[in-house]
Length: 303
Ligand code: ING
Image 1 (tube, rainbow, N blue to C red):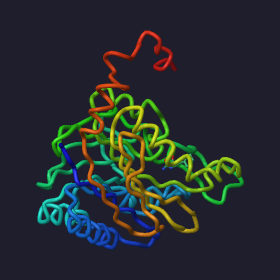
Image 2 (cartoon, rainbow, N blue to C red):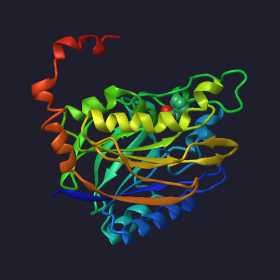
Image 3 (cartoon, rainbow, N blue to C red):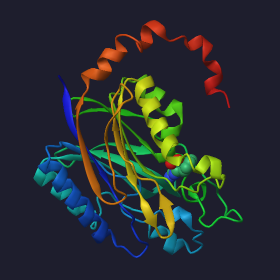
């Protein structure tokens, strides 16, 4: 069997005043625990180096820029890569990316896959940006990802690593079936993702009271319908007054949750991920070649 011993390293709140040095220290501590528990891969949250700053309107550009990484690894994040190399463990981590492309300053909500040798083997930029591009009245916290990021321009890629086909997405992406299916059509066997998910996102109590259910529903459906493992890692707890869901999970291609965090702080969960479970679903129920009818799906790619 092709097994990836996988860890999800959930983070509790990151305060606005917390430095990257502080957060990297927390990530390293969990990386060590993951290694000690036999993991060869650890999945960290979305925007793992800073507080979830899109909850505020930040008008000063220099202050906004302070939440982004202009190089990866940079001086403050390099210790995480060095520790990974020393331990011989790979990782997935999300961060705010600031780059200059085509002569323009670009901002992306980004995640990378790093192999046990400390090399970046894949990069993903979040495609589905939730929330708004301008502050909304009546909200206790804003959700300004459309203001602070551009939609990802790298598509949904997959990379051969860890003996399988690995894919990435970020937070809101996990709610959209297209995310998993585009990777599924490329033979993905494990999708890694991080999330920062406030309980009060829509301001509709009936919807917001289902935040935990919708979190797992999205990942379990994506996993089952594309015969892939899904590792979903939260940054959670009450972060600068905003309460965000935890319950990080490792989901089997069967759709079953095989490991789940039970705190709202820094917590490592692990699972023995047998990639051949997905293979059995692809040879039967989800044998795309035998069962899919693309001519019936054309509306999906229309605007
Ligand atoms: N956060 C949330 C997410 O998709 C959200 C936004 C919360 C959408 C609750 C719907 C319901 O999990 C990010 N960062 O995408």
